[in-house]
Length: 73
Image (cartoon, rainbow, N blue to C red; front, side, top):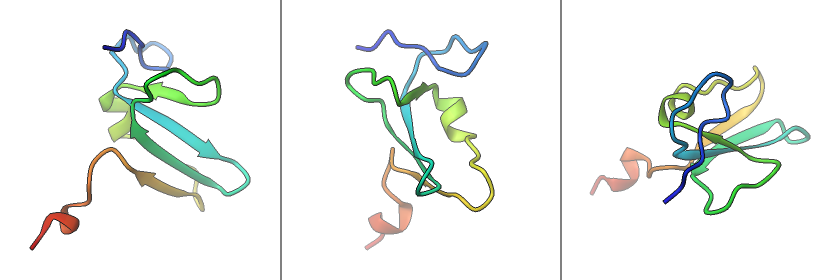
């Protein structure tokens, strides 16, 4: 079990997701929490991961859970 906390300043909640971004590609994505911390990734709590906004023109993908339409039969 992880004892890592959210990277957002002032937040002491437990991390549950990992934010990764690529400036050159203007892309950001949130994955399930990485098994090990990485110096270029940011751990976020569920609230901050759920409410993440990226700069205008960037692409964003939340890869923590499947898309609902993928589950439809």
